[in-house]
Amino acid sequence: MKDIAERALRYGEKNSDYFEVRAERTKLTLNFMRNGVLSSSTERDDFGMAVRALVKGGMGAAYMNSGDWDDIKKSVDTAITMAKRASKISDVRLSDEKAYRDFWTVEQKRKIESVDNSEKTEWLKEIDRAAAESAPVAARIQILRDSLKEKHILTSEGTEISSLLPTIEYRYFIVVANEKGSEQAYSQLAWTGGYERWDEWDPKERVLDMAKVLENSINSGKTLKDGKMGLIVGPEVTGIASHESCGHPSEADRILGREGYLAGESFIKPEMVGQRIGSEIVNVVDDPTVPNSFGYYKYDDEGVPARRRYLYKNGLINEFLQNRETAAKLGTKSNGAARASGWDREPIVRMSTTFVEPGDCEVEELFEDVKYGVYMKSFTEWNIDDVRFNQKYTGREAYLIENGEIKGPIRRPIIELTTKTFWSSVDAIAKDLDFVGATCGKSDPEQGVDVWTGGPHMRLRDVYMRW
Image 1 (cartoon, one colour):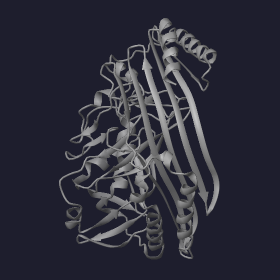
Image 2: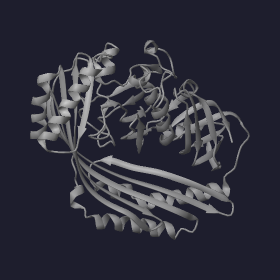
Image 3: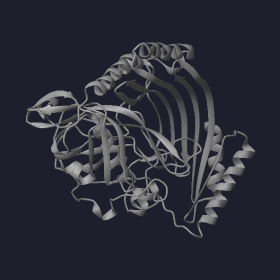
Image 4: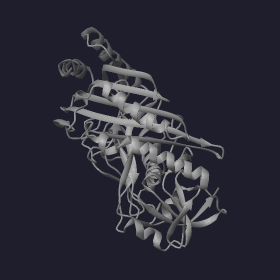
C-alpha cells in the first residue's frame, strides 16, 4: 500500500505546488444485536486512497478505492485539474510546518485479531440474557465494533507518517418501562487498544446497574420547584458541555464561517482570544495524546504532531483548533487538529478528547456546603444552538442534595443556559477524571469521528433548574 502511495506522490508533485497522499486500509468487525437477535455480523477489509493538490491557491481532491495504477493516475490528474480550476476563484494557503518521518502505533495486550468473532457474539448474548431476565428492561440494543486501521500520509514537503491504530467500542441502548412510565439510556464504551479492556469495562454489570438506576428513577424520582440552586455535575455532563460549548465553537473553520450552512458557526470571533468565558478555575482542553483515548493519534491527517490544546484557559478563550488552511488564514501554526473519518473524506478541523482539567478538591468536598441543589450524574438529552451559545441538558441519573447529603432520585432535571453562564457558574472542580466514548458528526458529506468526552465532577453555583 505504501509503495503505490509513493508512486502517486511522485506523479502528482510534478504538476502542483503541494501534493498529499493518504492511503488507508481498515479491517473492521461489527456485530449488531437487538433483543437477543443478532441482526447483522459484518467483517470487512476496506482500502482507499485520498489525494490533494494545491496549485496557485486552488485546492483539488480526489478519492479512489482501487490499487490499479491507471485508476490512481486518473484520480491524481482529476485533483490537479480541480485545483487549477479552483485557483481562479480561491486563494488557499497552508501554514508552514516541519516535515516528519515516523511510524506510530498503540499496543494491544489482547490483540483484536486474536479474538474470534464467535466469542464476541457470545459476549453479547450473555449480556442480553442477563438484561432480559431483569423484568423492567423492555428493549435492548447492543453494538460491538473493532477495527485495525493502517494509514500512510505522504506529502511533497517530505512528510512520511505511517501508523497502525486498533480500536474497540461497545454501545448499548436500553429501555426500562413499567406501569409508572419509562426511561431510556445509551452509553458508548470505547478506546484505542485491544480486548484487554473488555473485562475492565465489565459491560454486563454496567447494563444491569443502569437498568436499576432507570427503574429507581421511574418508581421514586421526584420533581422540585423551579428556581436557582446549587448544581453538581458528573464527568458525563462535564464532558458533553466541554464538547458542545467549548470544543465545537473553538473549531477555526466554524469561526471563519466555512461550516455555516453545514454544522453551524460559532459565537467566538478571531478577536475574542483573551476574553473571559468562565471562572478562573476553568481549563477546557482538547488532547489527542491522552493514552488509549478514543480518537488518539500522534500526528494528524496532515502530518502535524498532536499536542494538548488549551481552548479555555483560566476561564479565558485561549486558542482555536486549527488545520493548516485555517492556521494560514489566521496567521498562526496548525496545532494538529486535521482529521478525516476515512479515506473518502477530506481532513477538516476536528476534536479528539475534549475535557475539563481536574481541580484540587475531593468529590465529597463539592457536596459539603450545598444546602439545597441537584446532583446531575449523567444526561439523557442535550441541545445547543448553531453558534454553540444557548444550550440545554436534561438529567438521566440525578439526585436531590440537602445540607451536603445526597438524598433520593430526581426525575429529568433540566438546565437551560448560555455557554458563558455555565462556565462562569463553576466554583469548584474535583480531582477525579473519567471519560466516555462518542462519535462526533460534522461536515457534508458527513464525517463521524471517534472522540472521548469527560472530565471531573464540578460544582456550579446558583444555576436555574426546571422540570
